[in-house]
Length: 138
Image (cartoon, rainbow, N blue to C red; front, side, top):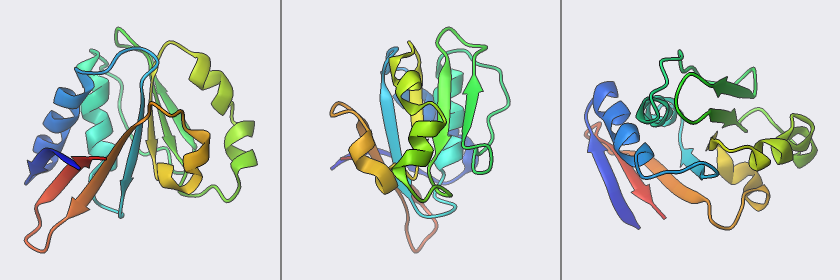
């Protein structure tokens, strides 16, 4: 695994997302894997900011997908946490979103790994005993 960032605050996690987001292009898919509180949504805030979005980025846990379209590239933010079956992901338009010229960021992506394209960027977020949040790319 490749170290992306060690962060000590929400602002540092957002900055890590901005830095990583600057390497993405339309059509990119980012899979975020990590426990509750690991920083997945803050990382996504940074990805959205990296394309100039000024939209309010929030966890899509209950809405399942949030769209941020105010930047130069739309960002589609998914959360698979509350989904039990792949058919639920398909019903919310997963395949159509994959065809969009946007960046897809998926929290809890490992629940339905088989739905993500082969070229997906897999990021793992961890919290160490001393509270440092670390982002690795698989």
